[in-house]
Length: 212
Image (cartoon, rainbow, N blue to C red):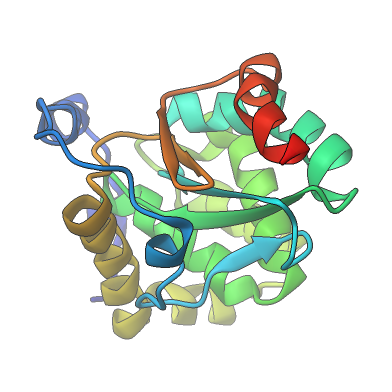
């Protein structure tokens, strides 16, 4: 799908519809195991930390979600410094776009490639108020240029139909297989944690896992 300026327009009605869709009451289900969560998906995982870390945290996030941005501004820096960088936590980021603008931002992060992908995700969350607007293309391009995009590679990335489809498939799989319905949703060694969570709350969840 070629994503155009028209398709980037994010209306309050569209966001409200998406929120209603993903915040409906879920059926009861057992939390998936880490092994189930780690089955290969439509796209390779974006991973930070040691593969053999005692705790695996998987985050499902939408790039236009304010709560996700707040998590990455407040909780994530301490999580990375104290646990990911020290080998205690393996952190996996997965896309769960709630609108086409979120999907487009995720596409840019994927196109950045390698370590730049997670770095660009951090920048996009930090500057969400600058580009998650009715006319986002110019702001997204400027952010993209900081990661090495040109106008041509920026346009090429946003026209990548296969990548767009795979990012939507990531959301579909999370919703169908793991009952993810809102963002951010974390799985801490398979245990679901919904909504924004402080580093103190997250540490309480991780403490028994780090002792075992």
